[in-house]
Amino acid sequence: MSYTKFAAALVRANPGNVRNVRISPGRCRSTVASTKSKEETHQQIDGCSVVEAEPVELISQGTHVKKTLLNKISIDFDNTQEAYRSKGNIELLRSLLVFKLCTIDVLVEKNKELMDLTRKVFGQWMFEKMMKLTFYGQFVAGEDHNSIKPLIRKNQAFGVGAVLDYSVEEDLTQEEAEKKEMDSCVSEAEKESPGADHREKKYQAHRQFGDRRGGVTSARTYFYADESKCDNQMETFINCIKASGGASTDGFSAIKMTALGRPQFLLQFSEVLVKWRQFFKVLSAQQGKSDMNVLEQKLELEQLKESLIKMGVGAKDDIENWITGEKLGLSGTLDLLDWNSLISDTTAISNLLMVPNLETGHLEPLMKKFTAEEERQMKRMLQRVDVLAKHAMENGVRLMVDAEQTYFQPAISRLALEMQRKFNREKPIIFNTYQCYLKDAYDNVTVDVELSRREGWYFGAKLVRGAYMYQERDRAQEIGYEDPINPDYEATNRMYHKCLEYVLEEIDHSRKANVMVATHNEDTVKYTLEKMNEMDLSPAENKVYFGQLLGMCDQISFPLGQAGFPVYKYVPYGPVNEVMPYLSRRAQENRGFMKGSQRERSLLWTELKRRVLAGQIVYKPVY
Image 1 (tube, rainbow, N blue to C red):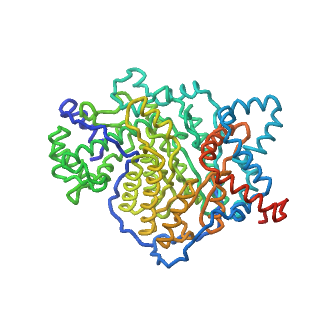
Image 2 (tube, rainbow, N blue to C red):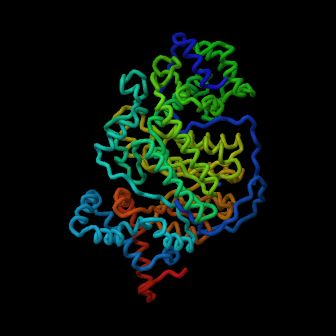
Image 3 (cartoon, rainbow, N blue to C red):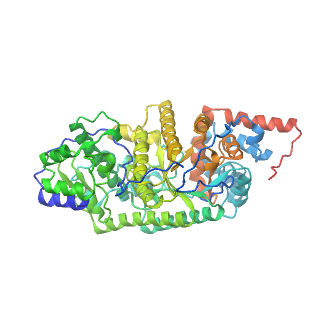
């Protein structure tokens, strides 16, 4: 018996007979793992436009790989001659100017107003010239696919690949953004009867946080308008995927789920996943296992059945059929991954959104009214995701699913895992993103890796620190739920390294895991290299990648690329006027980055002085 059939039967047969179950609002993982396959496979010892740093031979899939002792790799990130070989003197001076301007508070805080004023005073043509000589030239590659090709070819020659990112954004006012968010996140049922569905506050839309751009400096934000716009955004992603496939045999492309459909579904599905996870925690506590590690919490099957019967969740035969019908509990226990697999049927999304009520304990629909149009909108989002994954596979491109706010993230991660289960059977195509500033990041990674082990597919992860910290903290405090963010930067660093080490150990064990170390933190890069040396993990195996933004931290990217590591720059492109929101965020992000560390500017000055003393007044990169 499927989950949806079981849930629907319970509501019809026992609408008032389910005894109260007190569900504690404890902290939950933002990732909820997916269905367990019918057969467990054994591990083998032996994944927009992207250009590979150097052609690398992939480890053959499905074969054992003998580890050979590698020469220990050491990279000197202080060697400015190597770091800036690809840059002319004018480019170094531009970097120094832009980074200096980013430290001036008034310029950063008023950057939009100043850019508008400059455009009015000097005219559009001169404004674009000035931007291309400064901020646009530093952080954006060009206006279209053709104009960015010289930069991509140059970076490729120096060992650095590229991930194309079409960075055009709507220039909405705060009021416009809030209206769009409320319209797209509030269901018809909520509009007609506010508060009637007992929704958790975290997973409801709140007007004061409707503008999701607030406090976010390093992530693009999409607002839902209609289904046609989602189709257009899907086509933009497809174009990036095709461009990646045309430029490289092993490219990357990135997508955002909020660009592909109405975010109402992400909110609702996230709440379902979290509430069922909380239900598992209650059952685990009843068996005295609440203090165990998340993967060690195994419910004794007979005790579980008795508990569900006592709670009035269903008759003995119904519960027996529910569990055995999914071929679970054959070992006599049921763990979190088994539990998650009970929520697996997406053919009728309105049936899927069934949850234990946190106040009454009754199993009931999350929404009392679910329109046919809302059902169609949600199915179209899933269809768009599937289309993109198929295009990625057809073009030989790896697809990275970007992380977003924690109230969307459980659904986003679940959809990413469903794509991995389907498309990562022979090699890693789909990569999920893990935000290591979250308290539950390590649980997210370990549970998902365990799922990939059981089902035998290739685990793909991008590790980031996170882009929504200030917004997440303000929202949690204002609305009244637990802050999901680690207490300080050092705690986030420890979490990042802990997650990274776990994935590296999985790579060392099975060669079926893959990770993108997306960071500007030099210490984290050095930590990764140390671990790779300890594990005799060669960069040529193409299992560990590095990523930085265009125009930032060249002293990390280019030495890595020239040493043979797969390293990528996120390469934004688009018309000058239409990437202004992106440039505004880059200025804000660099303000904190440059004030906290003078290292990059110091290295730039060192290289300029070296060239002057060496008589290289006019330096042109040779490639």
